[in-house]
Length: 112
Image 1 (cartoon, rainbow, N blue to C red):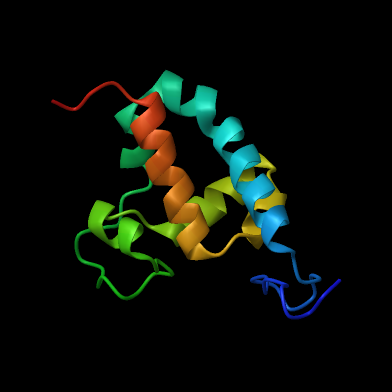
Image 2 (tube, one colour):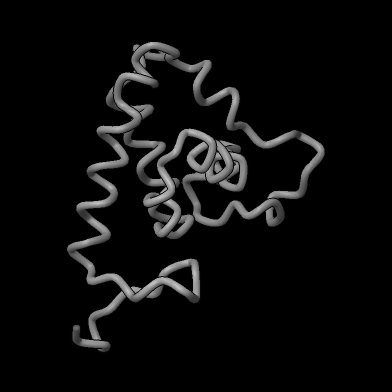
């Protein structure tokens, strides 16, 4: 593995990932979310929304998409762990927020 192109993981005990591994993991997570979001629609995301009394810079939610949407990525990581999809925990907050927003755009009905 070329350390110059490796992507750090969130866990120091995990090996570094290559960029194409992160893309594959994002795609697999999106597929994992597909039928859950289709079935629950916006209720899926309501369960992940940040409590209104929490500060925007706290709670493990980094990334502009998560901040705008009010999604609590710490809560999402907990849900992933409980759902048994621990592999996705290697993604950083920006990747998780991107996948959540993509799932919302692709698998929920129009909000208009």
